[in-house]
Image (cartoon, rainbow, N blue to C red; front, side, top):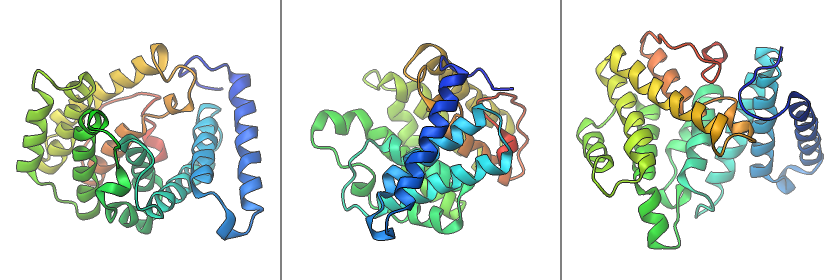
Length: 248
């Protein structure tokens, strides 16, 4: 039975799944050098998340999300300067960590800052600066298993200043707390951080920008933090359809 995760009707999700399959087939019919890697990655993301909402077989969902991570990290790697906000890389890298191959993870870990985020103005740089600092800590931790606690604390302090963006004050700080708790083996703090992120994700899915987007179906930026904690032997006490641990 399909899951009710946002305001998209089940029939629309089915149509979107079929459309994503069509997009993928059109790209794969081209010669490899002519394929749009970003378009393939986006289509596989839409397909994988749609299949999850429709409750199709787990192996099928994991396959599509893994391919999304592969093609998105390859697309980002191929560019000298990013055309997106750092949250785009965050999702791509999280998909690679959760569902991809080690090469996909190492590809993401080896990128330069400009490949992840190359703002054209100071306002954008200020707006997404702490997100960039977080994803840099995330990719180093995912690649090496080590976290610079001092650097993490410095970014957390920036998240609590009066001028910090609300997103950073709540979500970026929670992500940093999750990373730090994994490094320290603090299950309680880790679960608390994941819960904060899931609460924010659910609110966006039901009332905010995710109401009509497949991004609502799985809290990918939270799932990667769950994956990293589980890999360290931590015990997740959270049960949520937005955090499908059964896919890991």
